Length: 277
Length: 76
Image (tube, rainbow over all chains, first blue to last red; front, side, top):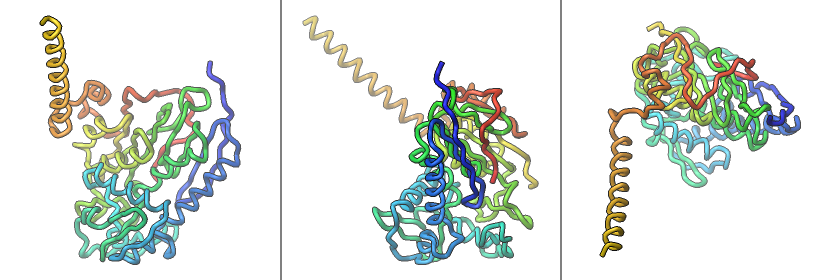
C-alpha cells in the first residue's frame, strides 16, 4: 500500500478569479511561493493594467518590443493554441473584447458594447510575431491572453508545488503526480469525481461573464460572441493548457462536431446545454 | 548463398515494414476521413452518440471514483 501524504492547501483570489493550490508532502511556504508567482506573472499578462507588459506590447503595436522570459513563452503558446485549434483559439481577440464592452474587469462593470465594424479576426500569426527576446503586434491589432494563460500557468506551478500537486486557477487545473494516496488526485469534472494523474482539466462556458445579451467567448470567424449551440464544455487532457484549448475549440465547433473532436482529443469530456440561438 | 538469401529477405522485410508504416502514419495524419483508433471509438461510445446534457464521457485513460473531489473544474 503506497504511503499516504498530508495535503497542504492554499486558496486566494488572483487573475480575476479564485485560485486553489494543493501539494502532498510540501510545506505551506511552497504554496505561498506559488501564489506569489501567479500574482507576478498575472501582473505581466493582464490587459486591464495600462502598465502591464502585455498592455505595453499592445500599446506599441507596429513596433518590436523587448519582452521578458515570462511573457515570451505565453505568447508562443498562444501561437501554438492557434495552430492546434485550427484558428479557433485566437489571441488576436482584443479589438472584439473592447467592442463588446469588456474593457475592464467585470467586477467593475462592462462598458457599452459597440459592435459596428467588427468582423472575423485576422490570423494570429499575421498579428503576433515573437523572436528570441522581442515581440511585435501588428498595427491596429491587439492581443488578449485570457484564453490561454491560466492553463499555461497551472501547468508550470508544479515547479513551486512539487511533483505531487494540483494547481487550479479559476477552473483551469493541472494535477501532477500520484496524489495523496497513490490513486491520483480527486477532481470534480461535470459533477463526477475523476482521479487525475499528470492530467489537466478545464471548462469553457458562455454561461458566466455575460451581460446585456453578449458574453466573453468570441468566435474568431465572426469576431462576435459565439453562438454555436453549446453553452459549456469541460474536458480532461494531458495538460491544463491542452484542456483549455480543447474545451474552447469544442465549444466553438458546436454540437455536431464537438463530440467527434472531443473523442479524438480529450480523455474525458462533457458537452452542455443547447444555446439560446 | 543461403546466408545471403536470408540477409536479403530480412532486409527486404525491414524496408517493406518501414515503408508501410510511413504510408500508414502519413495517411492518418493527412486524411481527416481516416478511421479513429479503436480506443477512441470505444471511449466516445461511437463519438456522435455523446449527449449534450452535460453528461460526462470518460475515456480509458481516466478513472472515475466515488471519492469526494478535492477541487473541481468550473466556468469562471
